[in-house]
Length: 182
Image 1: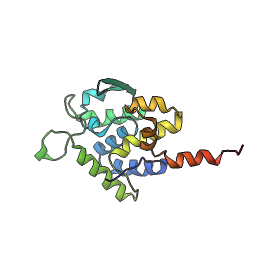
Image 2 (image 1 turned 180 degrees about the vertical axis):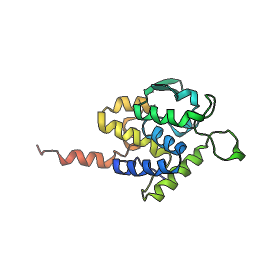
Image 3 (image 1 turned 90 degrees about the vertical axis):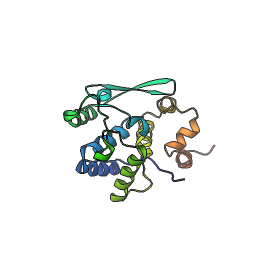
């Protein structure tokens, strides 16, 4: 099984953002929505224009839970610009191939998009799941609030969540660096 990591430095994020901006507006928005929300790829590809256009927050259902989270000003502008020529019932991230019609992107294809971009930009161990992991990593870095992060991700185990964002052994070693012997 191939393990992907979050993007942990903002320089890599800027590089990928620039890459997607040059590529096309669909992939650029997909990348930005992915790294700025706790949504899974399967949730992103099911979004319709009406779910996000002119909204200040997104509400998604995860199992039996309903989770809402805000859309920042940058995302709102990207969404508005991207949706200018879209119908409200259109999938937000639909296939550009005529053969697929008006169907949404598949999770596998999103993974291919992200992996290809990361290879082009020489960034390792990145895939579609890295988008959500990146959001989670920076959320934790800013807040240090593992409980609210677990709720956003619908995780039930603190250790799993720390491992998910790449804060496992290295996290514990960083804490021991500042440890003073008793």
